[in-house]
Image (cartoon, rainbow, N blue to C red; front, top):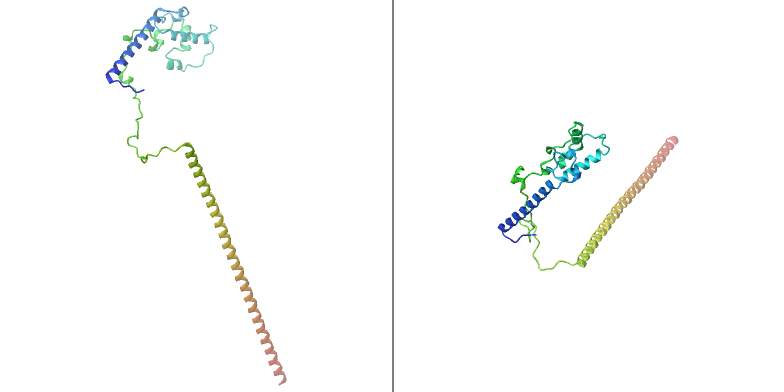
Length: 243
């Protein structure tokens, strides 16, 4: 909610509200001093009845009845001061300490100042700086100041739902087509590589066959030459024998 009044009017309204709340709280404190429940009129609360808020005393009764329901203190865990730190109330260990010391009376100093039924003037003053709060941040209309992104100005209306679904389906179709093209390209590349490998193998086989044929032909020529040489040697030896 945004106020449309000026600053003076807003401040005066806040002052009146705080005064009303202060008067109502003061009336509650005065009634608490006079209206004393019978269940709180016990020796344990002799020095705090009418000086401490009844809510705190009722809470102390619940703690006492929980741990001392039989009149004898059961085994208590070690004190961690959780009750004093969180609620400003004495714990069961303090009550047992008073009972064991044969004092049996809680003192006003055992309770935090927030539970004391004393005049407001006697309370310690608060630092006004601690009452300051961060102002509410209101999001202004339009483009934020200092924004680096700016949409192009256009009179075109926002796309409807079916247009968004159609654009999404087209985008999915385009992505599917791209995936299919990439898959086909990979398959074609694989077939091309396979074909090149087969061609190289075939050429290699042809070269090996030609080499074998050449080796066979050379071997035949060498054998023929050796045969002719052997025959020539036989003829020469026969001629020498005849002479």
